Length: 177
Image 1 (cartoon, one colour):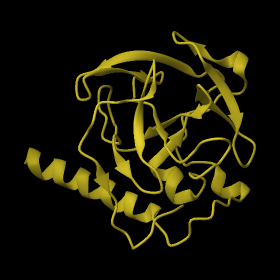
Image 2 (cartoon, rainbow, N blue to C red):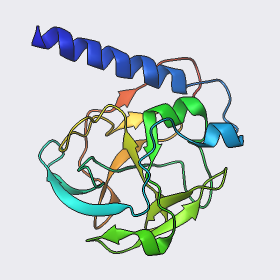
Image 3 (cartoon, rainbow, N blue to C red):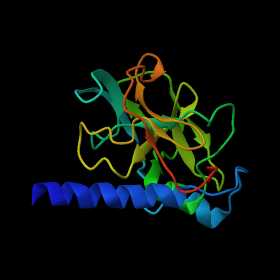
């Protein structure tokens, strides 16, 4: 019974990730698509470090202890995760202002997302949680490839350098949000 439950959960995550793929690589957004269905939002975003035995490293986590990720293609002000499909799988960690951040790590800030919300950043890189991670210590989003690679964020270098078995979505011949 336990294996069936794991299979169903894995299948649901796979279907959701497949929905993220499309043939378009252009990053566009409308105000309605820039807000995730279940974003990690609060008046004060809490970021801290926690040991992750799956990855064998300390990673950044949110107030609930969920692993925080970044997308390798989102650099230098380029937004990729803006569609409703992407935001259903990857929830931006948001805060009202830099002053509302509560952290035990440095190098945190905020950046305006398309649509105007403030997303928490680490060393300038936007932070997200993954819908497949339901409890502290999980890192099911590690290594997922699409228009970039999703990786857990470590407090020293940014993305984890610990290789994990990559997961690749297979929704079509090209990927994008």
